[in-house]
Length: 215
Image (tube, rainbow, N blue to C red; front, side, top):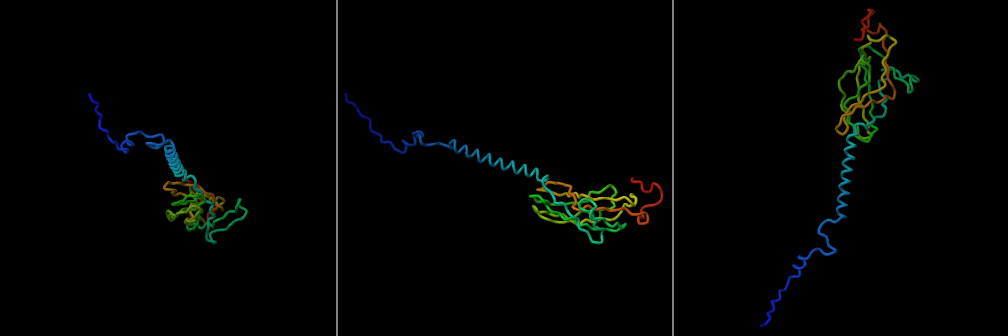
C-alpha cells in the first residue's frame, strides 16, 4: 500500500489578502472621528440657518430712523425758538392753499428699507389735509439717506375756534424690510403747529350755533 500525495496548489497572494478580514490598522468605513466631524458641520449649518431665520423674522422690528427735521419754504411759516424742547415751526395758515413739506429719511439700521408711505400723525379733522396721493417709493440702503415730499391743503378751520391749533410731532413711515411689511412712528426733530383762523379768515365758519359740530 502506497501513500499518494495530493498535488500542491499555488495560491494567489492577492486573493489571500482579499480573503482576510481587516487587520488591526485598517478601517472599512468612517470612523468615530469622521462621524463627529460630520455632526459638527451639520450643527453649524443648522445654527446658521436658525440665525438667518431669526434675523429675517426680527428685521421689521429692528429698523429705525433718525428724527427727521422737516424742510419747508421760508414763506410757509416761522420757527419759534423756546416753544417746546427743540422749538416749533409755526405754519402760516392760508385757507384753501397748499403747502409742501420735505421729510428727510435717515436709516439708522443695518438692513435695507423700501419706504412706500410717509404720513403726519394727525387728528380726525386736520388743519393740514393731505393731497397728492401716495408718495414715490424710496429705497434706503443700510445707514443710507433719502427723502419724500408731502403736499397738504389748509382746511377744516370750521371745526376749531381761533385759539385752537393742531400739533404735529410724529410721522408714520411704512414700507418693506426683506420682503416683510413694517410701519414705525418717528418723532420729528422739530414739531409743527398750525393755528386755526378767526372767523373772518375761515369761509367755512358761520355765526350759526351748531354749524361747527364735528360729525
